[in-house]
Length: 251
Ligand code: NAP
Image 1: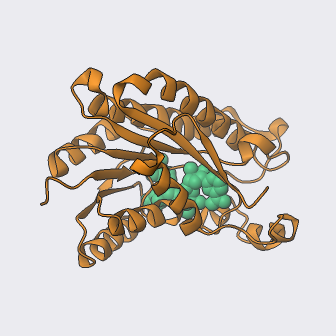
Image 2: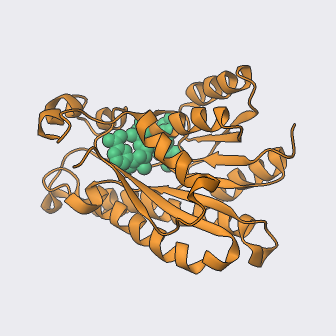
Image 3: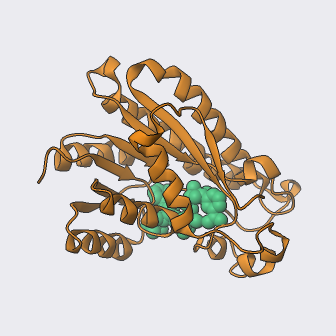
C-alpha cells in the first residue's frame, strides 16, 4: 500500500461510466474503491484489471439506496485506504418507459431512493471524511447528473429526469456549503452515452434509435464522460466548484 497516493471511491463503478472513471483514475495514480450492487463478477474483474496494471483497487458491495450499506461502504474504504480524497456519486438507475399518469408510487420512490437519497447519503459520508470542519484534509466530489434534468424526458421517464434535477441542486448547494472546508463539488451532465443503462430500462436500441437526432449524430462514450469527471476531480480544476459540465455533444 502506498499511503501517499490519493484515493477515490466510485459508486456504481463496476460497469459503464463508473468503470471508465475507475480505469482512468487507476491510470492517473489513484487508489480506487469500486462499488457495485449486484454484478460482483464485473466489479472484481475490474479490480483485478486495475491491480494487474499496477494500481491498488478493490470491489465493495453496497446499495446506495440503503443507509446501512452506504455507511459500511465508506467504512470499508477507511479500513482499506485510511483516507478519502475523491468521491464520485455515479450509481444511478432508469426505469422502463412510462408517462407520469402511469407511474406508481413504488416506482417513483425507488427512483428517488437510489438516485437522490443515495447521492445525499454518500455525499454526507464523503463530507464527514473530507471536510476540514471534521478534521479532514479536503477533497473533491463529482456527481453524475444528466441532460434529462434540462430536457425532462417526456413520455420516457420524467421521474428519472426529476431525480437528476435534484442532483444539480445538490451540487450547487453542497458546493457552497463546503466551499470553505476544502471540498469542491461539481457535476458532469452526460447526454446519451453508450452503456447498458438503456437496456436496463427496456430500450437496448435507444442509442441507435436516437443518434440521428443528436447534433454530432452519435452518442458519447463512457470514456468521454469519465475524462470530464477526472478533470473536475483534479487540481487543474482548483477554482471550479458548483459547476454542472454538459458532456452531451451539444444536445
Ligand atoms: P449502467 O451502465 O447501467 O451502470 C450502472 C452502475 O450503477 C453499475 O455499476 C451498477 O452496479 C450500479 N448501481 C445500480 N444501482 C445501484 C445501487 N442501488 N447501488 C449501488 N450501485 C448501483 O449506468 P451508466 O450508463 O454507466 O450510468 C452511470 C451514471 O451516469 C448514472 O447516474 C446515470 O444516470 C448517468 N447518466 C448516464 C447516461 C447514459 O446515457 N448512459 C446519460 C446521462 C447520465 P451493478 O454492476 O452491480 O449492477
